[in-house]
Length: 163
Image 1 (spheres, rainbow, N blue to C red):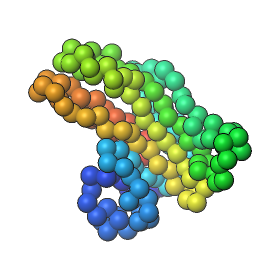
Image 2: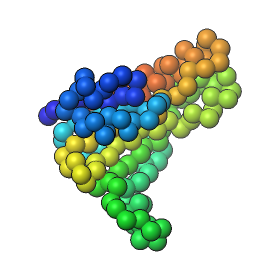
Image 3: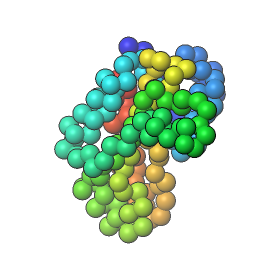
Image 4: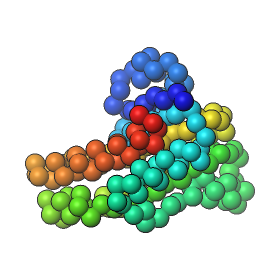
């Protein structure tokens, strides 16, 4: 199983990680961290679900983004299949959420937390898993609390990608 990270924070990622297509490395928006793995989508999705549940967290909602886009493509003039499969899992951590919101009530904006997983038709067998980085702003206490949430999200994505 080949595994490699993708991150907008890595300057020249296409050069550092030649197994990543330059288009994919350049398309990761700032503030998003993603990892790719050569594996079956369902295996990576299951590993992501287990990474969440095994930490004692509850998945509140699974958004079947790929299914929705495929189902509505004709209705909205969609001309191409974007994903073979794509999901986003939403969850919260009572401990981390409380610390973040006690530090600054506006941190409610980040809850629930989300991680995503997808496979595209032009790269079958390559699955991308990742998350949106939460902005570490405000007081030092708030920055530290959000950094802990980002660490959790990164740990989940890395685990699902087998890293």
